[in-house]
Image 1 (cartoon, rainbow, N blue to C red):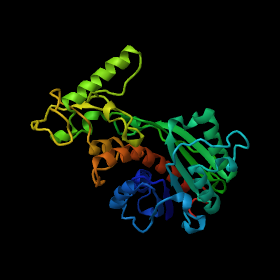
Image 2 (tube, rainbow, N blue to C red):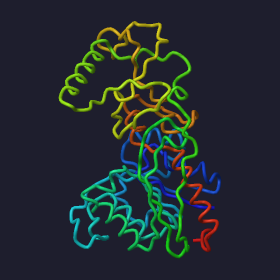
Image 3 (spheres, rainbow, N blue to C red):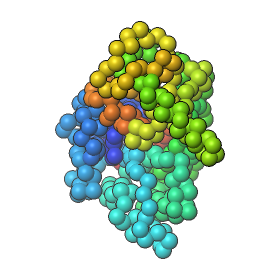
Image 4 (cartoon, rainbow, N blue to C red):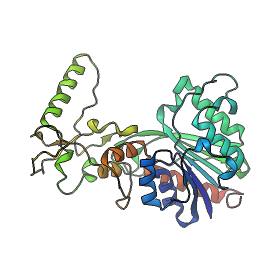
Amino acid sequence: MYSSIDLFAGIGGIRLGFEQAFGEKLKTVYASEIDSNAVKTYVSNFSSKKIIHGDVTKEVEADIPAHDFLLAGFPCQAFSAAGRKMGFDDARGTLFFDVARIIKFHKPKVVFAENVKNLVNHDKGTTFKIILNVLKELGYEVFFQVLNSKNFGVPQNRERIYIVAFRENLGIRRFDFPEGINDSVKLKDILEKTEVSNKYYLSETYLSTLKKHKERHALKGNGFGYEIRDPESIAGAIVCGGMGRERNLIVDNRLKDFTPKTNIKGEINKEFVRRMTPREWARLQGFPETFKLPIADTHLYKQLGNSVTVPVVKAIALRIKDALKDSKNGTSR
């Protein structure tokens, strides 16, 4: 039996991937998330009212339960004193420092973190160097790799860096990240099977504005975010904060009710162009159909954009499970 803590938990994507891999052999004993709307989604899916806390920066290490796995999707931030010792002290003032101080106190067996691909180049590589150095300084063997969600059974072109660190006394000197398992899923496979509400369809005015923006940017040689996706292709990355809705528009000609909803200004476009629904975004991230989406769409787009691709996390967690099974101290604290 393993225990885990879920830091910067969001809506619980990392936790879900690990639970899918470890099943009943994993118990989450603590979670932290500062966004109250994300907490609503998290709690409605995990029944974790008793263990979820707010601001991890205000938590005392000793008040956090002992754990085997520390899971964290911490934000990418610059280190203010970067470039000096490249170690623990340089991490002060960042959210990674709070991860590090908890690791230092509890010494979990495994640390798992996910971040944007650009973390490697952030601040000319200094940020990533400090993260690796801190983990090594704390007594961990560190492995990392960039993986693309599109190779793990979801139609989304999303590259992220994944970091796995094992406590040195486990004797794990090699760790192979999973290769892609399935890249054949297309956008059409995750779209709603029935007609969706016309609130997801763009107004004629807004679509016209997007087209003008695109033309203007094209003349300047710039790319512009608006893009209609081919159902036979895959989506672009749905990004942090829920941006990217206009980069993943689709044509869906099943609409019969053209009466504008209150949040659509003007007539609905006659080209049947719509945004993807939050449920479709959840499928892009590999969340199961049973995962509840209990709050307003605006919040859900943000939460799903900020989340992880669950099947990628599950695939890595299965490799971690195997590594611990083979290690000399993997099953005891």
